[in-house]
Length: 249
Image 1 (cartoon, rainbow, N blue to C red):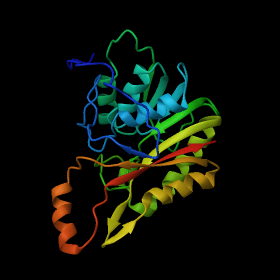
Image 2: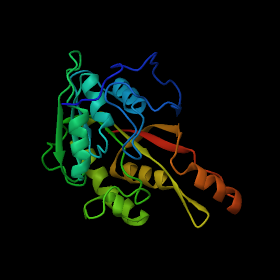
Image 3: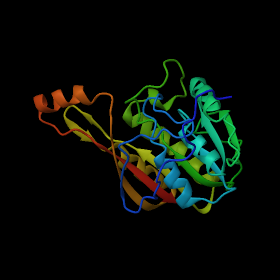
């Protein structure tokens, strides 16, 4: 069971986002949330998605659980959720984060080691909402010796493999339900690589329809100082946003 001392179980003065620009300068530290897992998203993001696109008692899916942020929010908001990752270290963190006892939190959390490209254990059209934050190719590598880890792949290989993720997402999601994915871009040899839009096209080509395109502002990036120096030296702008795609089946 989680031993972290919880200051509060809910965010203070929470208001749902109403526009297509989201910005959370404070990462969010309620319940068992923290920012120790590199690259994890603010809990404000899944909270907004879950509240807007699902109902209590629904079954959710996060096939790239990482540090477990989405799992915690689903449990707090009384949704059941299947959490998947290929990395045992991530799953260990997720089990710790979701082991809390808080009486109003009725959501059930099912954690499984698996590959997001092969969800054979999930029946067709059984998921009410997909809410996930995949790696951005090999921009951050989350393991060293896991062949199935998509964070090991260069950009073009990553895009190809994400087609399989999109296919499985489409298969397991119920008709008319939503799939939310946060994706960032990168820069190579001085030029922008619009990875997020490449992934958007992958999901659209599978059959998803783009319901919303949200610009999410980035805060407190670990490499900010390094990139500030280089942006002046080589005359480029710092990337300070990601794209949150809300697809509908």
